[in-house]
Image (cartoon, rainbow, N blue to C red; front, side, top):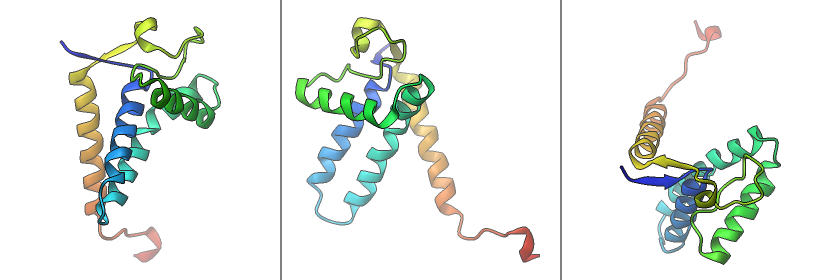
Length: 124
């Protein structure tokens, strides 16, 4: 029955945490960590874009505010309410649902990475 705040707030907060952890890694693993952090930002970018907001500007503004205000509840204001605080807007998701989303996305990536050759119709 646990929840995380929606509107991309959880993804942005996780992305910032992964980026911070990547800064502390010295070997090549930090590249994979940064790629994962970038992938987490796809949800808030899609939310902004689907709401008619400028996606990059919206994401950048919310990331900056999350860092400055140390407020992980800030997300994309899809409803144009005037606040990015998802707690105030009562926008939330279940932790179980969010975990399943991340698990399935990770599994799809693993399956794609296992593909070592692609056969094109012209190769027959």
